Length: 371
Ligand SMILES: Cc1ncc(COP(=O)(O)O)c(C=O)c1O
Image 1 (cartoon, helix red, strand yellow):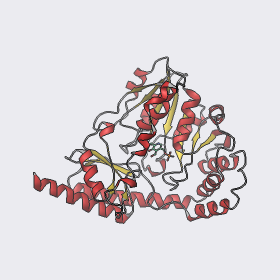
Image 2: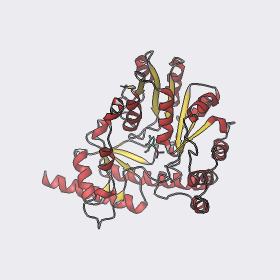
Image 3: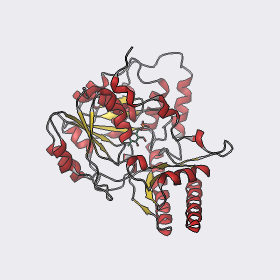
Image 4: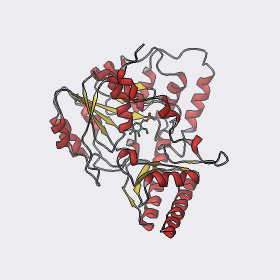
């Protein structure tokens, strides 16, 4: 029996050996999880109550439709968006996957701009037989280059991935750049704007991407409940697009696609925006404190529009990742993203952030003493 040849690039081994809490040196050490951009405050207590209530009827299938969740999402987004503009996914990752499965045929091209969330974009598009074209961000500034992206478009281009704010850099693609991109793209190309960190943005330059959906442009926006809503463990996300596109993508849903706990939790989360505001304020306060520490330690960093910060030291990131892990701090080095001295710090609890800075300072001092 022969498997789909496009699938062979990825195996379960990759997942089994991923950087996670199983890998800290001693099982006695409770690791600080600063590697997955999780929410240190967790979900709203009202969401937890909604999940508990839904858990009492788990013997019964959920409603076949996710309409109530889509209604809650559309109401939260406002702007005249309707449930027909929304499709849900079991995570933002799955929303991306549904878009790619709906759009891509073997030989199609997907343009992305590294460093970005490329691992995930490739993981889905390559097994579908698509080719990935990289038009990198400007080195050092990580500015998006719409003219270069437009120049890379061919008649096989199907998707342009725009991660905004971008992971792992935390930087923005500003409204002028997105506008230039959308104005220049031919009709056969769909822009996928991955906005899973959008709640954390505090900038006038952030594009109003919903406007393009309402104008009927070829654009799909992806949001997630994993970040500001604090529900990474639940796996819930959604996409926003003009109804003709959203309906097409949602056509890939399995029967009873969303489980009951996720449906209840998503609705409750949408209805507690005060919690989201608390989370965002917390993250901004912590980011300011970490910036001040990086300034004090003369560490280069990029101002972030997300709940994580990219920073660079003079130590190879792989080594620093190991040193930190040995001391119970899980962070992701960025060598795989072409940044061999950069690390990504997910902002954690106040205590975690302080412990991390103290440990980093200690490691850098010890390394300097060694020469
Ligand atoms: C840029 C980006 N997009 C999508 C995702 C997927 O989020 P999830 O699948 O947890 O909704 C992540 C997760 O870290 C991300 O960083």
